[in-house]
Image (cartoon, rainbow, N blue to C red; front, side):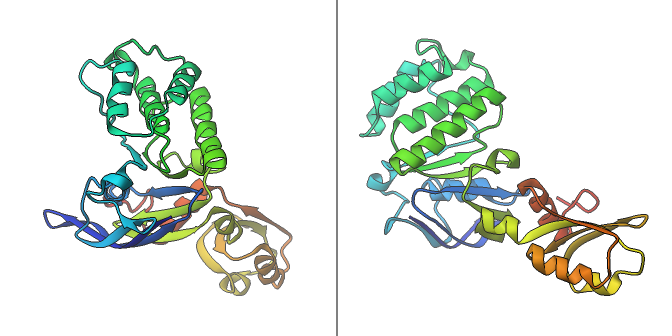
Length: 298
C-alpha cells in the first residue's frame, strides 16, 4: 500500500503540490489525471524517490521511499521522457537493469521483446518513439516490481500495441499483485483499466474516488419540457446546464433515481439519463471550477 500524506513541493517559489493526500491500495490500478501543470509528474517523481518533498510523506508498506535502497528495488518509475544509455541496444539496457535490480527476470524480458517484435541487438536510439516507449515498459516490467509508476505510458504507441500494453499491465496486476499508478491525458485508455481515479488541478486534489462509484454519482440529462422546469432543475446538484431550444442538457451529481424524481415534478415530455465517460467527467469537473475552453488561463 502507498500512503501519500499532505505532500507539499515548491520550485523557485512556484507551488507544484499543495497538500496532496491519497492512498493507493495493493493490487490496484490507480489513475492519475489532471490539467496541464497540475503536478502529476512532480507527484510521481516524489513517489519514486527522485524528488524529496518539502513536507509530508510517501510511505510504501510502512517505509519511506526517498534514499531507501530496499524500497527502490520494488518500485519502477517510467518517465514520459525515457532515458537509455547512449547508443545502447536492448540487450545492453537489460544488462544495466540487471545490475541495478536484484529481481530482474530474463524470461519475462525475452517474452516481452518477442511480443513487441523488438530487435534486442538494435540500438534503441534508432527506434521510433512508440518503440522506445515499449522498450521502457518491457524493461520496467521485467524488474518484476511490486509498484509501477507510469507517466504518459500510452503516448506514441499505436492502438494494437496499446492494447497489448494494457493487457500486460492488467495481467501482472491479476497474476502477481502488481500495483500500478498511471498518469495520462488519454482518459479513454484509463476507462476500463483503472480501479480508482485521482484528479489533480494546480497542485491540489479535486476528486479522489473509485471509478465505478464516480460514474454512478454523476450523470448527463437530456430533457424536453412543455413548461418552465426551473424549480425542478434547482433541486438538482447541477454542474453545467445548456439549452438548445426546448432541449435541456444538464450535467449533475446524484443517482439516477434521485435525478429522475427531481425531474418528474416538471412532467418532462422526454427525458434520458446517461452515465458520463471518464473524459466527460473530467471536463465537467474542470468546467465546474472555471477551467474550460472559454476560460483557460494557464
